[in-house]
Image (cartoon, rainbow, N blue to C red; front, side, top):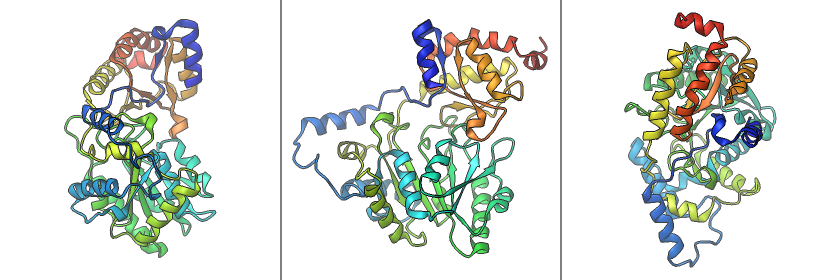
Amino acid sequence: MFEEGSRLKKIHGTDEIYDFTLGNPHLPPPAILIDRLRELVNGSQEGIHRYMPNSGWPEVREKVAADLSRRTDLPWTGSHVVMTVGAGGALNISLKTLLNPGDEVIILSPFFVEYMFYIENHGGVAVDCPTTEDFCPDPEMLLSKVTERTRAVIINSPNNPTGRVYSEQELKSFCEALETASRRIDHPIYLITDEPYRKVTYDEVQCPEIANLYQDTIVITSHSKDLGLAGDRIGYLAVHPAATDQKALVEGCTFCNRILGFVNAPSLLQLAVADCQEATVDLTEYQLNRETLTQHLGQLGFQFVHPQGAFFLFPRTPEPDDVQFIEQAMEERILVVPGRGFGRSGHFRLSFAVPHSVVQQSLPAWERLAEKCPSLKERTGD
C-alpha cells in the first residue's frame, strides 16, 4: 500500500491522495528532546561516539530503571535494562533469547503483523489467539491455546491496529489465566508487553502497569511514537526484577543484541532520551484527527470500537471482503490497509498520524465511498 500510494501521488499529486496506511508519526519531538540533542552535538564529543557495553550506557539504563521504578514501585535497576534499536530490535533479541526451534509464541489478534515474522526469524511458531468482538483479551481463549511448547505471549496495549487500551481488570484476568497455564505446563510463560504507544492515550485514559500484575514480564518500548523518533530507532527492554531466570534473560538479550547485528543502540539517541522518559509529543493534532474521523465515519454508518490510544482506527468493512473494500477506497484515492493482514478479516485499518489538513480534505472522498456501499446507506437511513 505504501508503494501504491507513492505511485498514485506521482500521477495525481500529493494533495489528491489521502494516505492513511502507515503509522508514521509526523509530529515533531518535544522541545526537551531537541534541546538535549543540541547540547550533546554542541558539547564535548569525548567518548560519546565510541562502543559502550552492548546493553547500553550504564547511566542511561539507570535513568530508565528509575522511571520504571517510579511507575511501578518495583526495584528496577540498570542491570534489568537493555537499550535497543527500537521496539522491533527489542522484540527480536528477546525472542532469540527465549526460543528453541518449534517453541510457540501466542499473539492476540488483531495483531501487529510483524510479530509473525519476528517469531519465525528465531525458529518459533506464532499461535493466533483471537480477542473478543470488542478486542478484549480473552482468558478462556488463552487457556485453550497454551501447549507444552508455549514459551511466551505478546500483548500490545494501546493496541495496533485497534487503538484499544486494556483495562486493569481485563489485564488482571488475563494474567491470572497465564499463571494458571504456566502451572499446568510446569514452566514459566513469559509475557512480553510491547508498549510503544503507552503515552499516546486520550480522554485521560491510563495504561495499567502489566509488570505489577505478572512477575514473568518483559517490558518493551520504543520512543518512535511518544518522542516522535520513529526514524532514529531507539528503545529498550526491561526484565521484571523478580522474573524467573532474570539474570540469564538479561545476559541472553545483551548477547543477542550483538550477534543479531545491532551491537548496541545508537549512542547519541541513548544519551538524548535518558532525561526525557516522562516527556511526550503534543497529542492535540492526533486527538483532533481522531475526533474528526470517528464523528464523520460514524455518521456515514461505519462501525468501530472507539480508539482510546495509539493513532489507529479499525472499522468493520461494509461488506465481508476487506480487500475488495480497499480497492473501492482506492478508487476514491483513499489508502487504507485490509484487516486480514492483522489477523482479523472484515476490517480495515487507517492511521490518523497525518496532518489534520489531510483528514479534512479526505471527508468528501469518504462520503463518495460510503455512497458505493449499500449496507452503509441502510444503516444511516439514506
